[in-house]
Image (cartoon, rainbow, N blue to C red):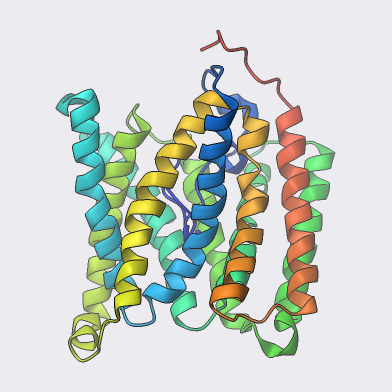
Length: 342
């Protein structure tokens, strides 16, 4: 959505919002890997990276699309991240970790297209069309709420506190869209596309627990990004972006923003997040879901001079409260595993 973020634990996020147990179709702790003790400084350092870097990717996307066409830029971003991550995996774990079956590749393609093309790609598109980065982050923050809806329609029965959180979050979403952010700063059509991006990210997160993905989440991310890169390249060619790029001046700040998205968003924050899943309580890690939007709104106002109206603050606050209710309630539905549990 970093952008939902990024690929974690088996996917990348739209601007950079990652997939976590908080955004999957089961209680937070149900997919929790073994948790080992870790130094407090290391945990908080990794958490700070996830908070700031993933929250900042919305602003980086806005800067990148100033002079770089959105789809070709996304293709370059993920296409660069693929060999870097693959090389790192092969070096640390051996080339065998990258061997997958055709069925697993098909599953990676489905999840990657939903999360990276539908989620992240649409966020890039709406920011290129003028949606403020902070508002985009608030709209994408509804991913955990939409996952609960998917659980409902597939027969799951979340607790009533979870449903209250969903209703609260959607009330904030409706207020934010209906008010157009106050002063007409939010285009309704772009806001709806951003919500659809969140729905794509939610569906990809939901299916990632039901499709035969590779056992190694990093290897799965390589092939998800590979499939998404191909789709972004085709979309860019079909929309005439090469011609636009040839007749435009690409600024140094856009290039730097694209490099930041690739290295900091797709690699640094992603690996920090996966490490946190194994070394910190999920109740602490999952706070990214409502910290990232706050970071994105603040950075958009400070560095992109995005207007923060009362309506944006009110609607965004209600969305974040709803997400916090869902995340905290889902965490309580199942106990966190002990460090000696698989």
